[in-house]
Length: 335
Ligand code: P6P
Image 1 (cartoon, rainbow, N blue to C red):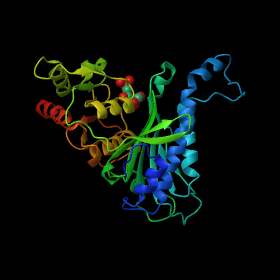
Image 2 (cartoon, rainbow, N blue to C red):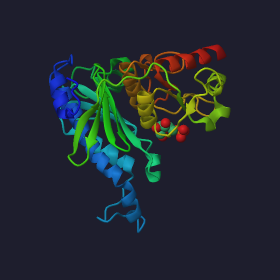
Image 3 (cartoon, protein in one colour):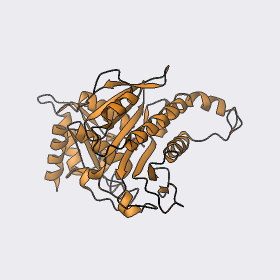
C-alpha cells in the first residue's frame, strides 16, 4: 500500500507480505534503523549548539567527553542493531573490522548482516550542511555461528535484500528499498513519526544536473574531462547545471527527485576513487536501480563487482539512466 501519510510502521506491516523472505525479522530490522535514525537526527540537529557550549572546554554541559558526531552515530546504530536478535554481524565505516553479534553463541542463526556508513559527509556538520546515514542489508551465507567476512560480508551488491539512507537535511527523510521500489518517509519531529511522503520514487530518465568535485579536474581521467566539457557545451538542453554539496546522500537525493548524475571517479590521486563499495556505493546503487536509475564504475554495474576487502573503494557514476550511459560512452572512448 502506498497511501501518502501512512506511517513507516504501518507501511512496514502492510508491505511485509510482499517481501519474499517475509518472516517479520526484516521488519524488525528496518524498525531498528528507524529508531537509530531518530536518535541520530536529534544529535545532528543540536550539534551546533553543543559545539558552542563545547567550546567552553573539551567537555559538554553534562561533563561528558564530547564525542565526534560520526562516532556517536556509529555507536547508536551499532547498539540499536545489536539489541535485536536478528543481526549476526555489522560492518561500519567507523570500524576497522566487522562486529560479530552474539559471537559466543556458536548456534547463532541470526540471519542478517548490516553494513553502514553511520554519518556520511560528517565534515559538513560544523558548517550546517546536510549529512546522511547509509545502510545495506544482506542475508548471511554461512548457516550458523559467527559470521565469516569472506562469505557473509564480501557479497556482491546484487545480493542485497534491502538498502536505504537517512538524509538529515531541511527535513529528515528515510528512503529505502527491499527490492520492490523505493519509498521516502519524512520525519515529523513534533511527533517523532516518519510519514510516507514520497511513494515509489523514480529517477527521471535524464536530467540537467551534474555533481562532482571539479576542483579535482586536473587529476581526472580524460573520459571524465571530456564528459564535463560535454555537460558545459551550449547545445540542445546543455549547458547543464553543476550542483555538488559534498554529501553523497544529499546530492543523490536531489538528483533522484530532479534528475541528474553524481560522479566520484578514480583519479591520479585516488586510484580507485574515494567512495566505499560495500556501505556507500552498493546501497545507493540498489536504490538507484530500484528507482529506474543506473549505477556503475564508469564501465559496468557497481552491484556486479565482487568485493575483495571490507573498505575497498570504487569509482562511482550514479543517477538518471541516460546521463550515466552518456558518461560511460565517454569513459569507453578514452581507453
Ligand atoms: P570530496 C563525504 O566525505 C563523501 O564520502 C561523500 O559524501 C561526498 O560526496 C564526498 O565524500 C566528497 O568528497 O573529495 O569532493 O570532498
